[in-house]
Length: 61
Image 1: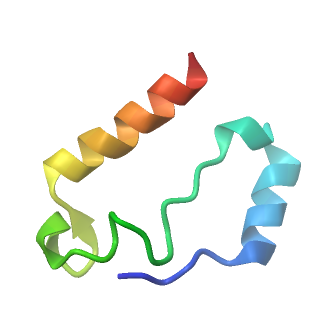
Image 2: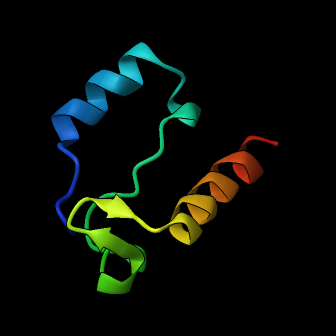
Image 3: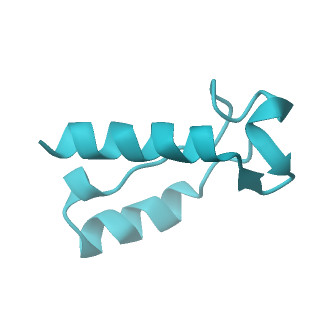
């Protein structure tokens, strides 16, 4: 929880794909800081997954 995605890896992804199609929900933020958003250490609860998907799809419109 709260570990930021590597900026070097993000640069590689953005060079390979449209940068508007890459999303980063890693690091310390309102999703990762609450232990109640997880089933266990690495898996979000469904309401968080829906929230992430909603933000991606609403951005893409």
